[in-house]
Image (cartoon, rainbow, N blue to C red; front, side):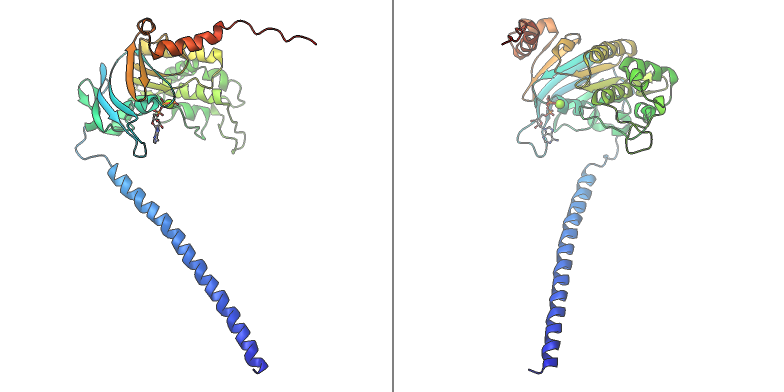
Length: 326
Ligand SMILES: Nc1ncnc2c1ncn2[C@@H]1O[C@H](COP(=O)(O)OP(=O)(O)OP(=O)(O)O)[C@@H](O)[C@H]1O
Ligand SMILES: [Mg+2]
């Protein structure tokens, strides 16, 4: 073979190899983009199913009673229902505590009460108005939630407390004192104007318990025209708080219910604090297995008494003996 032809052949093979690998690279890119596009199409489809139905009426302004009737709810990816046939009544000015082991459905119930999920069966009614027929935005404007996984907004301490509520200096001062967020903020150089995000200049990162106090302040503050919202839901609001802050929070939440007339739903594993609630509901595997006051539930030989005695025994254990010196 003449040397020039051999050289041309080598160059041609190299060029063909390069073109082939570019083509393969492009095909992989198209396939990957196709996957993102199918996700996008699925999200759009899902969003369409969640659009508010036409003809919804605004939520009633407040209530005397919230009634949950035969409520059943299951997650799309869940194996069975997370809540089954739950019946419960909340009253204004009273505190209801939800108690149960991990996975018993407490947070799911909180999300149904706050209008974030719609039950598959049964209803949530405010004074007889079924919430499945009311507009979600106007409903959520009347509910304050301290979520178990509350959001750390990259805003100032004041912004994190006020959020979208109308400004009211008196309610702000009361919320800051009730949640003890004021003593957290007192430690920041710029006070309430401190940015709670380390990524910004002069930003700070509060500790877990400090964030919880700010989340509590946000829920106490939530409301309009000088009034607090009629329903406050607190899902493990004190899990990261120290003993003093926790005690203060539970006292504040009961005082808040009495003063504002709000119904409070409290979810916590600290049974010593549950004792102060007006009504206690015990959940087990998505079902209400008992309800009543602390005294009534302690008389029954059920899950509540078992959990209570388990926690109380930790405080009754005799002192650990001093280690012996060799
Ligand atoms: N987003 C989700 N998708 C699918 N299943 C879920 C989801 N959230 C909760 N579940 C399931 O629903 C059941 C109830 O969960 P839920 O979070 O309500 O329990 P919980 O009582 O709040 O527990 P904990 O005390 O640990 O906070 C569990 O079996 C859980 O696995
Ligand atoms: Mg939970």
